[in-house]
Length: 213
Image 1 (tube, rainbow, N blue to C red):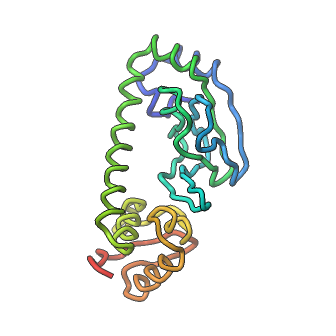
Image 2: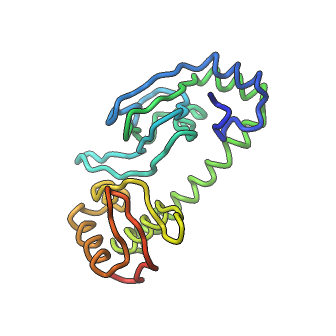
């Protein structure tokens, strides 16, 4: 069950079996909040199937999406390590299944399999770099620049074009810290210019996006 999860790569079959015996498998429906920002819970969640969005909310109810995660990813590691309140909320984007591992069981496994620590640290450094880029983007780029950067980051090469997973205008707006109306206008202009096409919420990038809007 965990053999394809990068966090546990390199572990023996026996070690994986031990972790799975301690973990609890649980399924959640679409649009279910799995953990809430500021919760004082410390378990680790491994995504076995489905996908989630990680976001923070302001007092005015506005949201900023920090990340999207899929099967093989995990979340909850920061609170698990330092026992501080959750820094973000996590909501399912579709029917999803998780293996939930308590802090005590994970630390026990870590003491027996120190190689997990390296697997844990690598994604953390990537997230720190991503957060630094996001802060820089908010400070230095206009809304169009943030939209263009987000599209490129979310897209993967399919043949000779870049294609994103399903993205709504509101999801893009949440990721770039702008209104849905502004994102809609930018996407419309990019479509009319032949830079992108949108089908069933998948955005295809046909040519290099313009440097300015």
